[in-house]
Length: 452
Image (cartoon, rainbow, N blue to C red):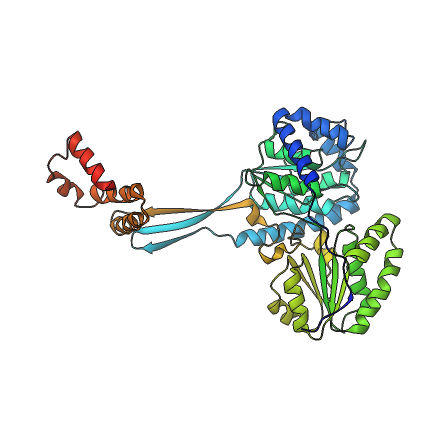
C-alpha cells in the first residue's frame, strides 16, 4: 500500500478522565438514594432550570401551537421518511418456528420492550432531528411507554420545535431535564414514570458515561463518542462539494474527525485550499468549531488506487462513509465497515443527519467494526421458545443426560432421565413392575440412582 498523508491529524485525545467517571458515579448514586429532589437540585445547579421536571399537557400544546406551518411541514417530511424506513426495518423482523426433529419444535418471537428513554441533546444546537430519530424508531418498534428528555434553555425550557418533533414522533412523557440527571430520572423511573428498559440517543461525555455506568441494569443503544466522517473521492468529484461535506461534519464539534481519501492529488489540494475559506464564511460559533476540528482532527490521504481507499475505509470504520466516485455499485459491494453509507455526490451526510430516513444515531470511534446504528431492533427483544412432544422427548432426554454426565452435572442429567421414567409411553408399565415403587423408600432409592 502506498498512501501519503497530505494532512495528518493530531493523536486522538485520551479517554475520558477518572474525574469525569467519578463525578457521574457520585451523581447516579445520589439520585438513586434521594430521588426526584436530587434531580431537581442538579437541574437548578447545572441547567439553571427552576421549572417543573415534566412538561405538562398544557405546556406541550402551547409549544406545538407556536411552531409555524413551514417548520411543521419540514419536520413532517423528515418524520415521514424516518417512520417509513423504520417500518421497513420492522418488516424484516419475523417470528419463526421450525420442527428441528419430528415432534420437537423451536421458534422465536419479536417483542418490543415495555419502556424506553430517549435522550435529545441540547447545548449549542437545537436537535430537532435527534428527537425524531430516537422516538419515532421506538414508536414503530411498538414500545409501550416512550419517555423523552432534553435539556432546557435557561428561562424558556425545551425549544418549541423540539417539543413539536417529540410529540409528532410519539413521546408519551417529556422531561425538561438534561445530562446525567435526565438519564438517571428515566433509568430509575422518577416523577411517576416507569423505569426505562433501554436508553437511547446521543449526548455529551457525561451523558455517554452515565449510560455506560447504567448498562446492564438497563439496555443502551451504544457507547457513543464524537461523530466522525470519511469521504472517498476520485477525480470525478467536485472539490467544493467535498470541502463543504467535510466542513459540515467538522461543525459538530472540536473533537469530530473528518477524513478525505482520494486518488486525485489536484482534488485533494483544492479541497485543502477551499476549506479555510469556507470555514471563514460560517457564523463565528460554527466557524470556531469547524476550524479547530479541521486543524486538529482533519486528515487528507492520497492513494494509488480505489482498492487502497477501501483498505483505509475498512481500517477507520467510519461512522459516516461518503463515496463520491465512479461506479457506485462497485463501492457498495466492496465496502463493509461503516455506520451508514452515502453513495454519490447527489446525497450527503447532512441528508442523513436530518431528513433522509435511515437513523443518524450511529457507531463512532471504530465501533462500526462490530455494530450498526439505532434501529427498531434495538427496541425489540428477539426471544426464543420450544416445545417437545412425547414421541420426540426420549431422544433429547438421552442425549441431554449423556452430555450432562460427561460434564459432571448430575442434576441436569436427572431432570432429563426422570422424563424417561415417567413420560415415555411404556413408563407406566415398567414402573408397575418395579418393587417398592409406591413407597417412600423406593422413591428415595430411585432419586439416588439418578444422580449417582
